[in-house]
Image (cartoon, rainbow, N blue to C red):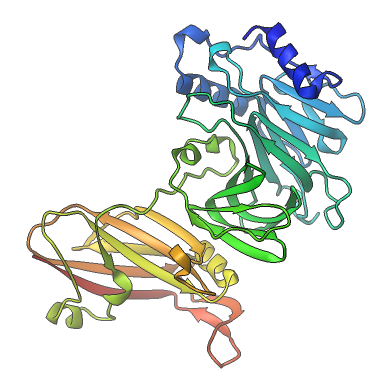
Length: 409
C-alpha cells in the first residue's frame, strides 16, 4: 500500500489530529522477495536490535509503523527512539502488511505495582499488529503508568497463519505478580501471556505460569496452555485448552525471558499415572494396573491437584519432575494448568497436568518411574497451611520416587 493510502486510511479511522509516525525507509527486505514468515522473522530481529534493555516506564519504537500521541512534545519517530510512558496518551501499531514491509511493533517496560525495592524488575509489553493502547488515568487503585488502560486489537483478514494479526504480549518478572486493569477487567499476571480483544471480550492465552482474570466479582484462572475470556461487567467464562496455532507463533522471543507456547495434550491411548503409581516396584510388577494395546501411541498423564494457587505457584517455581521409561529419561511432552480442569474436573481446587508421549510398543511390560525433587535438594516449606488439621505449613519432601508397570498386549 502506498504511503499516501496508508495516511488516508489512518485519517479515515480518526487519527487525523494525531502525530502520524510512518517510517517506510527501513524496509527489512524487498516485499516481492520474501514470504510472510520471512518478513516477520526479520522484523523481530530488527526490534531485538533497536529496543534492548529498556529502563523502567520506558517506551521504545520497535518496527514501522507506529502512531503515538503524547501529553507533551516527544521525539518518537524512528526505530530505537524512546519515551517516558508517563507522557503517553495513546499508542497505535500498524497492521501486518508484508507486501509493503509494514508491521508495527512497540516495546514497553513498566513498573506497574512492582515495589521500588526491585529497580531492575519490570513488566514487559510487546504491542504488535493492529493494536491500540490508551492509558486510563482515572481508575482508582491503579496509579502507576499504564497499569490501567483500554486495549483494542483488530483483525484485517490477512492470510498469514504463521503469526497472529495483532495482540499484546505481557510478561511479569520471575517470582512476581503484576496487577492491571484492562478494559475494566482485573488481570493479575504471574507469567507470560497474550491478550487480544474479540467481539468486546478480553481473551487471555497463558504460556507460562498463570493469570487470574476477575470480572463481576468472579475470578477464573488460566494456567499454561489455557485460555480464558471475559467481558466487562460479566463473570469470566470457564478456562479452556488453547489449541490455536496463532498463539504458538506470536513474537514470544521479543520478551526478556524466553518462553515457548505449550502444546495441547497429545493423542493416543491414555494411562492415568495417578492410578498406577506405587512407592515400590513390587506391587505394580505383580499385577499391573495399566494395560494398553500394542502398536498404538501411549499417552502418560499425571494430575497434580492443589488446594490453592499459592501452593501451585511454589511447586512450579521450586520443584521439578523427571520421568524414566525402562530406565531412560523421557522428556515431558507438555504441561497444562493450573486450572479447574476440563469441564471443572478439579471442582473448587486446581490441577496441573503433565503429559508424556511414548511411541507404539510391542507386547511386554513397560516400567515407568517418576522422580520428584526440589530444585535446591532440600524439603520445600511452602509457608501455606494445607487441607490437613495440623495448622502447620505444608512441607514437600526434597525427593520422592514412585513406580508404575504398564502391560502392553
